[in-house]
Image (tube, rainbow over all chains, first blue to last red; front, side):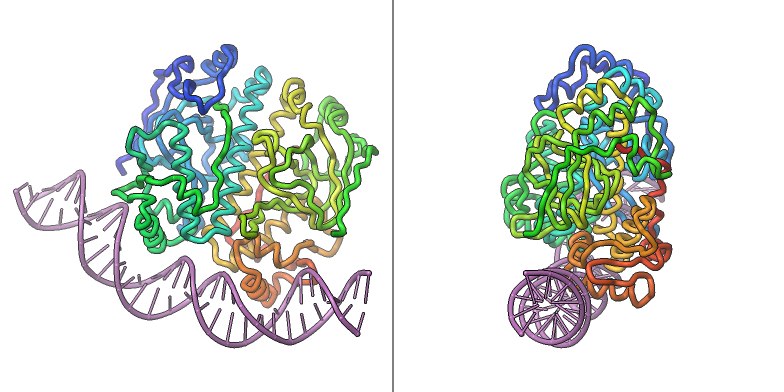
Length: 250
Length: 250
DNA sequence: CGACCGTTTGAGGATACTCAAATCGCGTGG
DNA sequence: CCACGCGATTTGAGTATCCTCAAACGGTCG
């Protein structure tokens, strides 16, 4: 497999973090920023397709996504895979390992991904010294929960067409808020990923995406999807959007 | 509707909390217990079938379930309902309202439910003064996330029979750890609830449960299910269980 | 007794699945 | 340069799962 991991001790200083200036994120006090900067241990860069964390692993680290796309998933013994959610810049990963002892899901990169690395051991000092950051972590966990609620609603109760529309609208909105689209509104994802997210077969997923394409809402390309009408996708799904104000990240 | 809510200012003192002695929960220091006791504002008792929280509501309170069964759900505009998870003693509810401003799901009681009431405003002092409790809240949120991961895997990738087996094993295990079964291992739930949890129609759910009954794994009764072989249910679903050690609650 | 809720059953049909094969683009090795 | 393999997408055919519609049954409650 052509995957590789590279740990840089080189640190993008948190004061120069490319994410913080985005209007999507809340501003941090100098005090908070300074703590996070010391909390950060290094950076990790992985190639597209490589596994960032494996179910069952005991990782000593927490990560915040700096750039790139990826996804969380679980598998059944016979290989059936369910994608749980997608990771994008600002997302905290590895928290599960803190409460369960080991990871309960795996994480894989869809594109080249870079991550900030934190020492799990020092999480308690964050809770002791910086209640506002502690609250942020709870906030982040609760946000993930909320997204999972929506996915569950989708997989459980929406039709195939609605599900596909919902998922693409969801990914599109998240990408848009993070300013991930430079002109081309391209989501780096495979139809197999869509299928494994929506609980559908790849064949049926293909036929469903084709319908969205015929309506001019998306255009499928090799290894990805270009969204052409996010609002109509939301309308089909009956989805209101994430509707957040600013959100924190560590 | 024959629903009612009663707020008692009467407080079961947290020092005499009937849940804390259970081996399922972690022990609390005197200090923590004292704070929680002051944090608690009263108790709320609701009848079976009544709505505890409604999607869109701005509640000023957080709750911990003291006794009884209930469920969280979301609905689509046309009435399709997805049950997201079940609430049982020790569960914290209403946290979503803290981060999103308003509730993103509704909560309904399956049996008579009693709840400890907390003031949301004072949550920040918890974070400021009691880092260990703050961490517990994160822990609780991460646990909920983990359960949702499992449900999503189930609804997305398991067959109808596997889904039903998983759900009943899940509810059975949770109830067992909370010592909720006095001899009769009875889960107070309707086939419609099962259907809305598993993403199936009521008809198909009925036929699926019937198969589990024929195998002697469960016995269905009016408004509930008696589990007769939890281990075999887990085996059918390929589910390992929640496998937690002790868990905290507020 | 009658209304109502939850459960059960049957029939027919829609949705989504599996199997199979063809196409396409891309990178690799000859 | 070309053949080849590989992964992703596409299409068709036949089938299984699951759905809707409809109706009946049983228990509870007023």
